[in-house]
Amino acid sequence: MNYWLFKTEPGCFSFDDLKSRVDMTEHWDGVRNFQARNFLRDSVKIGDHVLFYHSNIPQPAIVGIAEVVREGYADFTARDPENEHFDPKASTENPVWYMVDVRYLQELPKEVTLEAIKGNPLLANMPLVNRSRLSIQPVKSDEWRMIMAMGGVVND
DNA sequence: GCCAACGTTGGC
DNA sequence: GCCAACGTTGGC
Image 1 (cartoon, chains in turn purple, brown, cyan):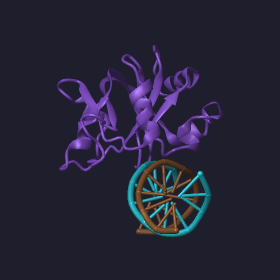
Image 2: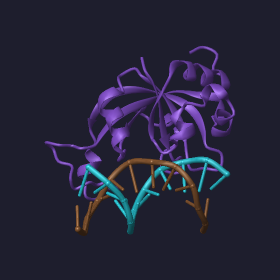
Image 3: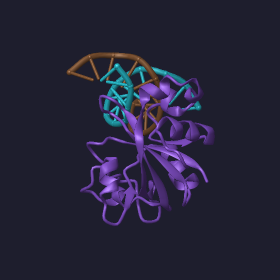
Image 4: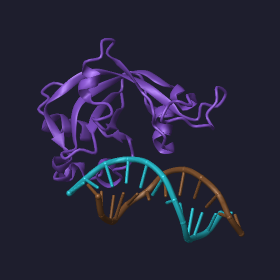
């Protein structure tokens, strides 16, 4: 199993939104960056766990854990002219953009702030610290364990 | 709201 | 294929 970090602006879609979904799943659509797209298309697998990160707020932080329930498939919002992420280059034959589905797994007892992550030398290599704009990032298993510890998760 | 970082676009 | 211009992200 691999670990990931997905970023979202809580004003757009928050962890509480995921938690409150009746069907428990969410299309992770709207990713329009090629490197992030490649992860979604090629590397994110069913059962992978995801750190849910809230960005663009006064105290950016990892707030919870989600699980991948469907692997990369065409992001249909790219073909919807009404959608804000519409891309005229996307077609049925060549979707260009991909998404996955995730479901709520667990809320962190304590959120792990970006400030705390930056203050931990063992997390200094996370893309979040030095490539903060990448919206889908791989997380190493030792980084994952450290964040679980910082977030107060006992068994993971 | 500012601005640095950086990804994308497009002219050549 | 280079690179300047431009747009977006996201921390602060």
